[in-house]
Figure 1: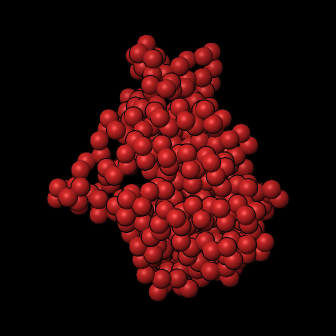
Figure 2: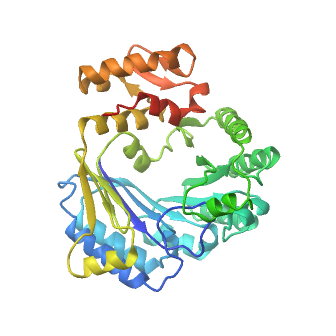
Length: 376
């Protein structure tokens, strides 16, 4: 079943590594909420009446919305779309926004049943370097409060490979998460994205490049530690205890349709992909006159094949051979030829029905996918 993504483009401050679309001023917040409500009205037929299995409020920092604003948006969603009674409803949040009172209100007065909390690190040295708005103490406290409020489905983000993150600090980050009983972890290697403060610091020599050896070592430690704790490595950056896989993100990786609402949000209907303008003022102005400001492309057969290979290889489910054959003979022969060296060198495991990345292959996931891309 499809999912709905709502992009809330506000943050208290800019993290040095982040290249997502957001604004650090809340001046346009009321107008932006009104525009999102209008877009929901205009896009209610995009998913052709199919029932939503997941709703995801991302950003940005959706926890900057107050309870009334969140409820207003969710009320509109439930009024316009059929929603599965056990739908996964996720709110992205930062620790400094989550007081015990707000957590209790979210749990008891909204349909939100899952929190994705941007911890990034339990080390103050890391958090200051990243320019996060919370402290290590706040990170721990908010997770304890969320569990006490009754949230059983929690996921946190942690970043490895930062120049301030020693191997010992990385091990402690994972220990804290596991000791707290967090059932899902999204863990990302620090990357230097163009247009970010971090990219500027690296160019000016104020910050070192990501050390690939350190990042790989911390990633392999992550694999071992999570396996020991009984977590399934079900996507290259995601680990979960059985029964706690992220339904919403899994729909992306499995190529299911979804609607994205809000500035910069993307949508996919199996045939085409579209994306809203990444500018709050332009987004608001367009919706005020009843227009959704987006661009759209119809995916070619080659683009569909490339997306299937890229997302499939990143998951525990891998690439199903029958799905590859469905793209036709040229694609099937091409992949079978290109994948052989990776199988021989132990980076890809082959069964009668699937191709999946091995432990060694997970270190090179992007490069392997690029080798298997069809280029016109």
